Amino acid sequence: MLKQLHKLDIAGPAGKLETIFIPAVGDTSGIAVICHPNPTQGGTNTNKVVQTAAKSLSQLGYACYLPNLRGVGESEGTHDYGMGEVDDVLAVVAHARAELGELPLALAGFSFGGFVAARTRSRIEADKLLLLGVAVGKYEIATPDVPADTLVIHGEEDEVIPLSAVMDWARPQQLPVVVLPAAGHFFHGRLIQLGKLIKRCW
Image (cartoon, rainbow, N blue to C red):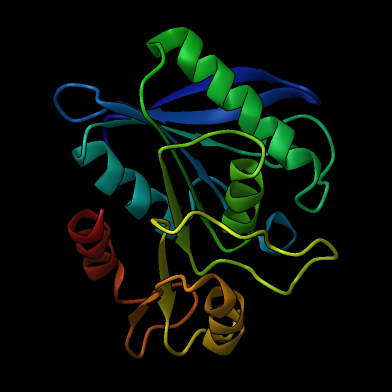
C-alpha cells in the first residue's frame, strides 16, 4: 500500500523490534508510533488498518514507526498480552526521538494495538492518541481512561469488539466516539473512507 517505506530493527527491552518506517510527506512535523492488532490472531505491522492509519498520518506530516511488537514476525521476545508491549512502544519512541528530536508525539493502534497505545499513553506524555476498533473488555487489565481529545473510531457492526462495549468504556469519560455506519472490525471495504476520516478529524 505504501511505496516509501523502510525496514529497520530497533533495540527493545526483549530484543530487536522489526519495524517499518514511513517518512512524513513533506516536512516532518511529528512522530507517530502505530501498534498492530492481536498477534495470536495473525496481527502484524502489515495489517491494512495499521497501514491505512500510517498513510493518513504520514500525509499529515508524521514520521511513522510501525513496530512488530515482541514475539511477532522477526521481533524477539514473547507475546505478553499487552503488558511488556508497552515497554516495546516506549523503546520505539525513544529511538524515534533520538533520530528526529523532540517532535510532537502521536500514539495510535488498531484493536489490541489500541489497547497497547492507550496503556502507553498512561505512561508517557503524548500530543495525540488515535484508537481504531480499540479492544476494550478483552484483557485482564482494563483499558485505561484516555485524554478528552483522543480520536476514537469504531465500526457500528464490529463483530470482535462490540460498539456497546466501547460506548460503556467511553461514557464515564464523556469521550466522543466516531462511528462508521455498517462497518465491521476490520473496516473491510471502508479503508479509503477510514483514511479520509482520520485526516478530517485529526
